[in-house]
Length: 105
Image (cartoon, rainbow, N blue to C red; front, side):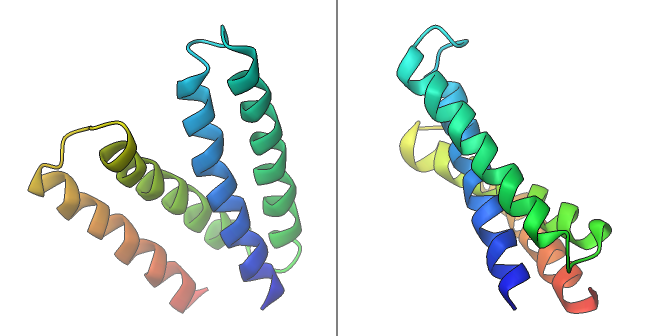
């Protein structure tokens, strides 16, 4: 059970990592750059903990799914990105795939 908590934390760290990378403006803004490095480390640390118990095929798929879906949703909410229904459909498909990996993993 803790491995799945670690994987969730890792996925949330991935969302933060990519968000701070955007805010760093090509690593020109040092505070956001530091956030990028710290959250990247956080994400990889918890991914490595999750990989001790969860198969890599499942863990990596779930990790990238959380990061991808979360980043798209955060982009829509925080950065005013498009909320096209097709985009939401594909996010739902990613979430469904991640849930499927958890079920069969």
